[in-house]
Amino acid sequence: MSNTIKIALIYGSTREGRFCDTVAEWAVREISAIDGFTVDPIDPARLTLPARIGEDETSDQKDVERRLAEAEAFVVVTPEYNHSFPAAVKMLIDLFSDPWAAKPVGFVSYGGVAGGLRAVEQLRQVFPELHAMTVRDSVSFPSAWDLFDDHGELHEPDRPRRTLKRMLTQLDWWARALREGRKAKAYGEIAG
Image (cartoon, rainbow, N blue to C red):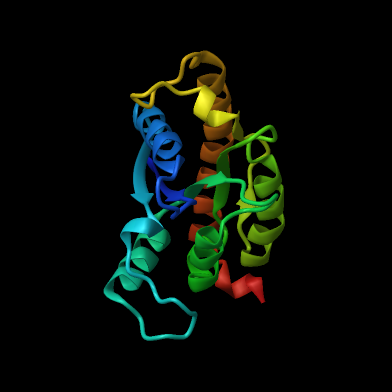
């Protein structure tokens, strides 16, 4: 059994000119620098997925389903659009219901004054329906475009880095506990 937790990091935005690249790439760098984690970035903007659920499967769809199934934890990097999360996140959630089950989810959010927290709060209501559990702490970047320089580095990295490490500590604990639980009994046997 591997001592490393594999995290699928989901890019939440597919908008042209999105700021998501800056925030997600920061998260990938930070998580990758910590022992005990590997990161698999999943960017819907770079994938060919069906426009509607139920359409013929694409090769990207099969690949993403495999990558989500192999992950032991998830980090969703989400902006806040109109007090909610983007459609790209919802499409990934709805296309692939099984791989999320009995795994933890953490959040890195960004946006205006609320820093994407309203999007996170709504996602905290969605993931339990997939039998995934969300960790308490999350990283939030209010007015994110003012916090990063032109090279994607934070002007003041200490607090977000501490918050990310706290979130990852929780994600790691839950990922390991749920790994053992899934090993002891397949979650599908009790999920109903």
